[in-house]
Image (cartoon, rainbow, N blue to C red; front, side):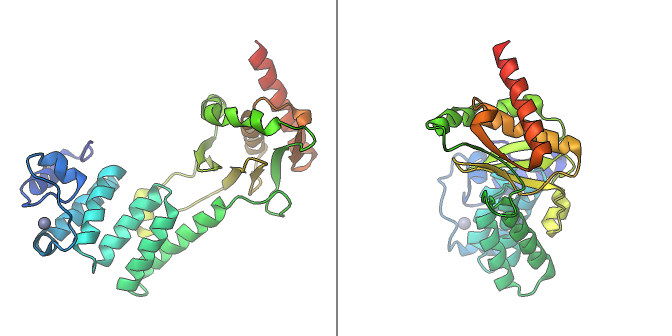
Length: 280
Ligand SMILES: [Zn+2]
């Protein structure tokens, strides 16, 4: 595991400081001090009192470097060493949030707010998490939130099994075709993000990140749906192309397309192009 990023002087500083700690309480410490047995930080009053802030600051440094693995390890230890610290809870919450682990992030910000009631940065971060969670909720086919969708026609039996294998390689197909959309699996959901939606780490630590034009495209085994409508024709085309990739071997006449004639035509065009590509 790489402990700290490229800021060499800070990296050296934290490495040196962590290396001389009396106990190993996290994975980062275990790498630095293989000679010491790892022990549970819970209830270690010595480290909590003397070195809690070191764990906290080193964790925050790793988080700023987007080294989530190391940040999580250090901040989980910081939480156990200083269960009274709102900052430890909030920073661990931010670490989870930036990894898309929203449930964990939310409960940590709840805890941070319990420890430091009505602190604006924490409540704002909490609102952002709730907002991101809401956007991730897959809309159902019949709901007004579902504006674009593709799903296998139930009249064709056995089609769902044809979709399953495409799940594994859809990432590759999408990488080839994506232009301005970032697409990735998140559990059973596809998230399609506009490329302008870049996580701003300093902002997000303050809890005021911007999420512009994020679409939640979900595949629940029955339907592919999207929670919002792209503002541009290019965006619409990308989503159609994305859905065509996920639908994979399904032919356009085997699926139901929701989203109006314009989207249906785009989707069918993308599917046709893909089936031709596959034959070549
Ligand atoms: Zn200790």
